Image (cartoon, rainbow over all chains, first blue to last red; front, side):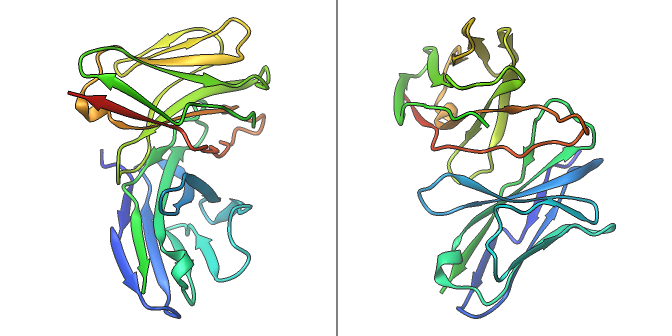
Length: 115
Length: 115
């Protein structure tokens, strides 16, 4: 049973370009969470999605950032017109529908470097 | 979610028990205590959680005080691979609608296991 898969693991972009990070949740999981970890800091919640719905995007920056979790395919975190401050590790987590344990399963992260 | 307080760092000798404290004096009656850890450059990993009874699994034991204002994570025989940042988080496990809530990570405790 494969875990949460994130790709790319490492991504380098120049200022102004777009970054797309993909997350495939564990099989059978319908909830996806995105977190961001800036260098030397803790993980910060960004967005929580279920299939085709954004449930909580309270941690998403107001501009340039968007997320989706389509009916088919992985969840996508999209960052438009990247700036150096977007350089960070972006972690995706998933959990199954109806889980009452509160356990989230995290991927290994995508590390974005903006030059 | 209730706020938690953890020491910034701790050291432990390999093979000895590691006892990681966490204060959560404002915890509510329906909030659970969760522990996650993050080994350097990896995604967070679930360890254990509990409500008011002590819990044990193959990774660790969780001791929650009777008043639930603090807890201790115990790694019975620490190894070098247990060196990581350990996060204590309190939150409700599941809302009445059956959805999962996000986890709010603090700064955690950096546990260094020494040979």
